[in-house]
Image (tube, rainbow, N blue to C red; front, side, top):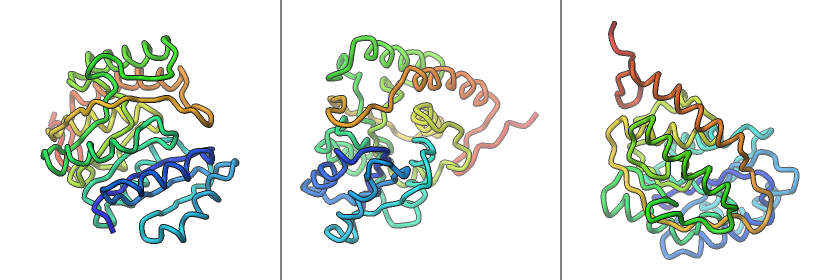
Length: 251
């Protein structure tokens, strides 16, 4: 059993999932993988099930009844990891937009350099995105700038979904109180981690949009993230952040 778990939510990722699993297991650092599939009609579940005997004890699968949202999939994965002895827990997309080789860089940022959260960032040195139309690039870039303005966080890629958490971070957060289920979930998790005072490091990556399968991204998803951060910031004004829970300030 590895000390690291990569959580991969899937919906209609049959074209990618086997290649991704094999690539991660070929890395010089050992990672376990938990695939959380939302009952994909394209046979993603079956593709993973066929791999389970080959990677017994390293590859795991949880199948949900329907499409329930990115955030709830990660919360399920976080709880699964915390019930076991994983010290480093990763978020990763299934479509190769995140380079599996960068898992080692994120791991070293936490395990060697001592950070509590490592974020694979598209926006440290300009815009490191391939195959996105300019409108989508600008929408994503300025959404992150807006989140920084509203929240005060110094994180440049606030909606990034390629991350490594130390176990202590997820233990500190009351996962049952996470409000958002879409991409605003990524902002909420970073914001709470930052409010707790954990050490955060952005690691520059190149994000490559999917070459196979259909994108789940839309303007509505970004709109949710941008509008949701307002309520997140306002509600935080009257809260005192303590590890494992958030306590309202006394009147």
